[in-house]
Image 1 (cartoon, rainbow, N blue to C red):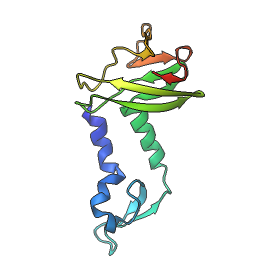
Image 2: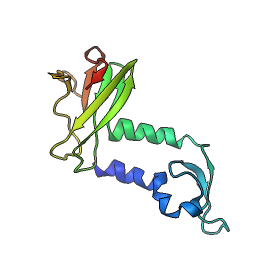
Image 3: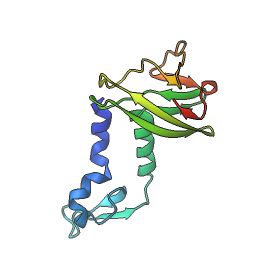
Length: 145
């Protein structure tokens, strides 16, 4: 729903685009710190590219908001989308396969996977009592999910 995206939005580097001339770093970079109001360099960001924040943000967005998460037995599809999103498409490399995943959400709901199709064949989701849909490795192949 809106909780994950409202939590990540304040930390997104692009939120500083309106003050790029003060911030002085690339608009897509997480910085180690930004000078506070008591500094003569207030608003300037320093030490870009020296944190692990970008990789953790990528994991948070791709695995828990878009909900495409690798597991031992397969690929779990468990999106937690902002309400109103009609869907998205993502390309994911998983165990040597290139997968194109289309999430279709015509009702704009935040969570809840009702079916998973590989090509034109529906994947049996019975037997998995966890949230989302676990697509078994043996059901996956290069192409569309």
